[in-house]
Structures are given as structure tokens and as C-alpha cells.
Image (cartoon, rainbow, N blue to C red; front, side, top):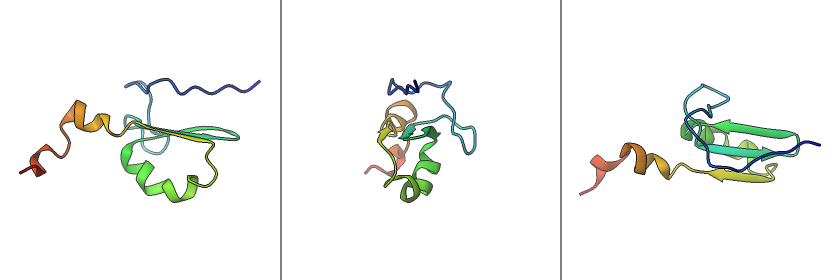
Length: 73
């Protein structure tokens, strides 16, 4: 039996494209892929229609790293 998880992603979870910290898990009928925020955006058109579930934790980037904080007025 093939099982997949949707537990929270950790710093040990790495992007399958570049090795950066993964913030998106894409569950497919054949398994799962992990992506950093950049590669999730870059490849979203390719997996959106075939994914059985997409776990997107990119909102954690703001919480953890203050990404985009300088753009606030």
C-alpha cells in the first residue's frame, strides 16, 4: 500500500528541484513532490490539473522570515 502524509512540512523537507526548504507538497496519483515557494509557482500549471491534493504552506514565509515586510507602508 502506498501512503502519503499531509503533516506540516519541516526544515528537513527539501524542494525536489533545487534543495531549498519546501513549503508546498503536491500529492499525485503516483506519489508526492515537494517544492520551495519559487518552484511551486513556476510549475503550478503543470501539476494543478493532475494533483490529488496541494498542501501550500507558503504563508509561513511571512511568519518565519518576514518576507515582504519591507513592502508595507
